[in-house]
Image (cartoon, rainbow, N blue to C red; front, side, top):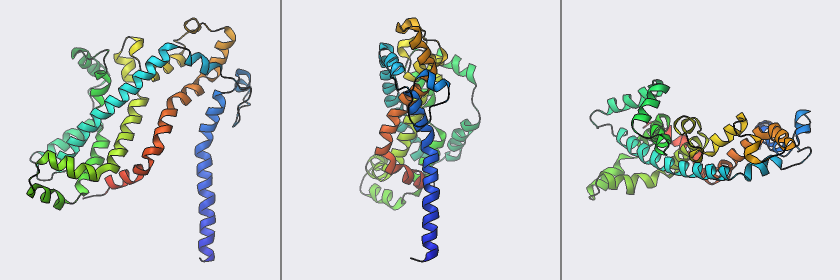
Length: 287
């Protein structure tokens, strides 16, 4: 190990440590604010350690039955929507990866066109209403069932797989669906895990579609519930809270809602993190 290499390692360690600190600081600050008192937050005393520790906002939010109903809705919406999106994206990407497919360029063009142009908010609302999808899970799932970015990443990954494997499987008697299920998908665990993470995070954080297409609060995902809480749509009477509690909620409600929304994703991410980098990089390889 030369002196230059040791110096490089030292600088590399310092730079990466600074990157980690800069990345973690906002999260730790938000967590500290969520457990701090209204006075400490208003005076700007909260940094990395909670000041005036309290759980008032957490207790108020957690004691509301509607919060747990909306949280359950979010879990259901995310699981169902991610499953449907993965099925449709995988099938579409596998089809587009076949260069001998007639009309392939047209199908690719249709997908790419939607990345830059859409029907607009009002036409989409009219369409969803006309199809009778309002106040149902399908208003959230179907319009966002295929992300073109995810589609193109999976398409590039499928194109990078050796064609000899599929040809050998076809000679052995497997049809197209058998090749996809028994050959292609087992080799695509990395990119599939990455796409599941992308879709799950997107659907978990989504709130505007539910806010637009759902009229009943018991159908809202938790993101809409928390949005209404921040906006003041959920008043003190609905919680039976005292004036002091309302003041406390107003002080750190944003921090609490960020923690409650991000926490499940942070818990799930470590289990798929090992697939994340490899999945994105493999999907970027040109066949």
